[in-house]
Image (cartoon, rainbow, N blue to C red):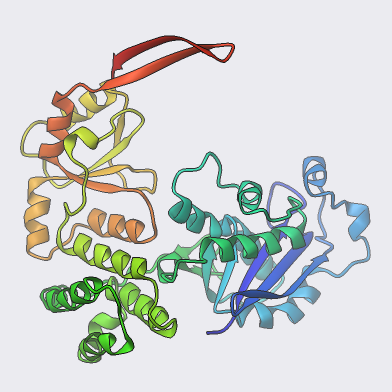
Length: 393
């Protein structure tokens, strides 16, 4: 495996199309082996609020190199990385792509990792996933908006988050630097005609996951299967599983939790309601629902109104903010025929990236809407509990 490169960009104004500070940290064999930062003359006006934020002023960069001179020397290190990472990566890559375009360079498609996504998937619930908050949690010294400190902290946070996490492929995205903000998620799924063949692969994974001790020889049946199914090997979800197995094999016996995640992913691909919450476990308040296919038992608009009355909301489009995707009856039938709805495919990919989104059936949702759950309300005054009551959601 080659190296990873953490980066940070500081911009002079709200247009975010020029760089006045750039930092990087190179990771090789899970160690930071190189770090650096430069100040650049962005050849544009500075905004006072931005100067207060990163303390890089117009006077400080006068006479310093422009982006063109810097990128001519730096791009070989940048493009040579297996993956580039940043915190809120889309922002930094968008800034870079605009600079690359405006200074006459040719952008390429790169693989990148967003440490914000890694943190959300690994740590689950936290009051904040800001880089400074993560640095504080892991005891990492951090100077916010200092390009070198931000890049090095990003690298250190990534190493801390992935210490016991061998499955990295689910955090990889493609970004086209020649087309600003054109993020291309990897959506190459296995051919529909091959879905039936995955049952055998799933059985092999289940056999391995049932073991308490795994040796290198246990991987042979899986390797033989992949050799005979090249059309599946490089496509989702087999691509994720194959990558995890490769990493796991390099580590020897590996981490049993990794295999549990792999098996869990396969089960979700074959059984849409595997591991889904029961009706009493569904939280309505502040939850965002999305529907797919047709609702048989009831009117969709009426169901959406009932959700809103209970403090939730519903929408027609897929996003990472969705908490539940409601599967209609026809969607379940299509699933059994290995014809996945586009919404379902997108949610499966989000789940593979660690997002907390659940599938639920329309029957489960309707059953939940019929129930009332008690929420305990506590009232404090000057730190003392003065009232305790139960309210219905």
